[in-house]
Length: 427
Image 1 (tube, rainbow, N blue to C red):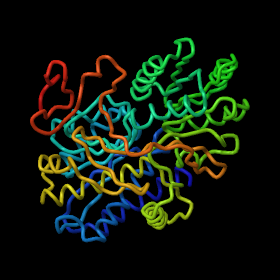
Image 2 (image 1 turned 90 degrees about the vertical axis):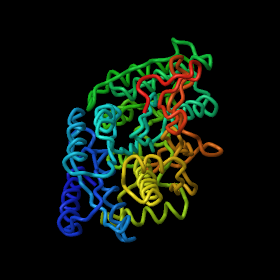
Image 3 (image 1 turned 45 degrees about the vertical axis):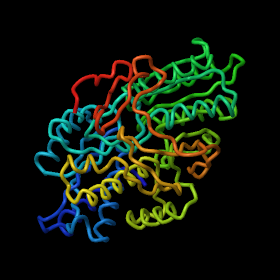
């Protein structure tokens, strides 16, 4: 489905929800903070639609605390400072009780002071670079130890990769993730000259020279792979140029952390077959829960071809955790819900469950999938069990002694275990 059609669906669904279902003011408002325009619309529109579906399904069950849920949708338009403005609008102006939103780390960083100042709750559903733990944020996407590190282990152990191209969009998530990966690779004995790092702006479209450089780097006799943290619509010309220059997965495999079923739906996948993506969920996973979710999703969107993806599953997990915590607390009061969220366990879509940890991260399986010609990903490797999200990397010297624990007596997101002190302001 084209982005234009998705936005049209967005507007019609939002109008329907706000005018037809929620005329009664006695509702619980839920903020939806995702870009519906700009470079990140290709990814974030799905998450907005997913939240509308989850809210509709919860209302069919009777709502929450005897009230119906009301979606309040705003469009920060892939404009990172605008995210903070829209977050404030949702919390102060619309009086929402929780917000589900953001994709890029720069958008999340933009809103953090707002959620702390106004003491509201953000559920963040996308893989990120770690090195953060905020009391008001619940991270349902993967930390580096739940995606990036296992993907590198797979390439190193199963594909015998020795040379590494770390290619990313030029902002905080790729730079910090690649800093962690570079330290991890060096700790595994990889020489500095066997690591190539490249960054490009959001929306970058001219990949000819960069792909040529990647080919040259991979032609020196050692097995080479690309670890991609390229975000948004820049992935479309990147993968097209790989195909144009004949870069096949058997020669230089690409493992992506920001490309899933939604992004692949807009590509000619034939030249991409065999390349990889690392996530915690794929649409192709076989489980009764996933089968039912896909059916509901496609019926809700009115599109039998509409795909799911990992951040959509993370939104599903986060929303259900919030519902369960509100029910347990008996209120939508922020402090009560934050306390109730720790330890909450809900089903994931891969057939297991996820638990909210004391560091406001969750447990997740890690999957590596191979791109198929139909745009789906076939699981070629997965972890033996669930991996606990780690807010602070063990591979960065400044982060190694830090832990996050938002329960008493620590109650701190960056507690130094060597000095037994909370760095920064205690919560």
